[in-house]
Image (cartoon, rainbow, N blue to C red):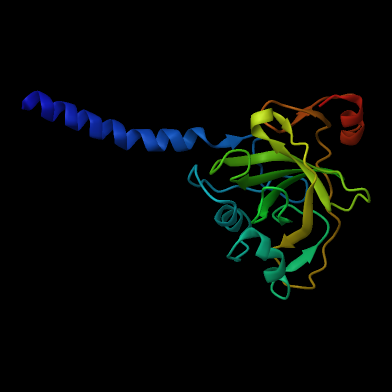
Length: 217
């Protein structure tokens, strides 16, 4: 009886530890976050390791919208400023496409260059997984952020899908005027590290589209 009691106590103690460990293992932090203006990473709050995209975007952006991700763009009209250009702290609203029936929302955490940003989001590469500061690339024909490729964890690279984007929702009143966001010029990024962040490389300007054509990805 005493031995059984010891085993039970040990099992309960182990069970109380495992969920926290499992959740911590699902969080990817691709690039050290820095506070600051345009070009710097937004400070991403510590949140549980398993989460849907909507509550995570709400937490990281401060934008108080609810419901399925595909409804956010319509809900934002008249409540928040919206536009077609990424800004640090804005939410990228991705339309339903292929197997994504509910759409997706992700917070912009850094502007890298005119066609590259870092996103922090949940429930993308793996169900419930949080990914911080991973790459999204503008692949739209008109360079207007209407189509993007996004880092996909299992392939350790940008996904091949061109995801349609409604636009960006800013945590500001409708009609707010913004200065053009400046990229982080302190780093030249050409390829991708294993964790999804653009890798650093010195010697020439960033050219993500040229690197894709050249097969550097």
